[in-house]
Length: 295
Image (cartoon, rainbow, N blue to C red; front, side, top):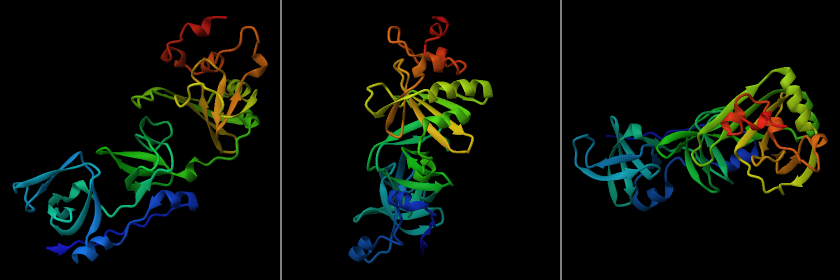
């Protein structure tokens, strides 16, 4: 048997905010080495259930079942098997393909959406809570791929989420508008469409730029369901969280904006159908197909 060589992962992190979210791996677990004299490396179970065996053999005695995300210490490798410690006094062998050795760890600083793949338009598979710690499997330019509940999920890097300070007047220059509606309970996509028609974009932009700044997030409207990503002529983007209770309100960077204000009538009000009807099929997906034809 040969002692496993440390897996050195070099991660290029952009900016101090990103660095604060990622805990880099130690070369080996120093506290375990001081207690036992054994040099071992932190590792995490990637599958739902992993069998710890007495010997590096699939037919060897099963000692216990290890759950997804469980932390192990890997001390040696023999072929396709790792010798691991589930605790200081519990050791055995596991198949190496189901274990991630010495990864960086992603630590959430607040509620963080996790996606099925590397796109804001992808189905959201989870909403991570603050201070969750998850192993990073891989990294791309804009995303960390993390191990989550026996599968992989994508979380956007902080620097990728950064856009220029939002100014409603920019909405008059949008070159695309992509709307994603998600069932927040199941994470499934209810609607996804991107508008690139200049005439429709001009109408969308005119509605959204015609605003009254309502100030810091005071509206009690249901948000987090309909997310509109707009791309401006200069290449920058903004993410608008559209209210889903008929109100013509969107939220950007913690501020609420009431849009289409010049069309507001104090007697009859105004519903967000004025915007939603511009996205083909959206009204039907919301169960409001007849509302678009009513005056």
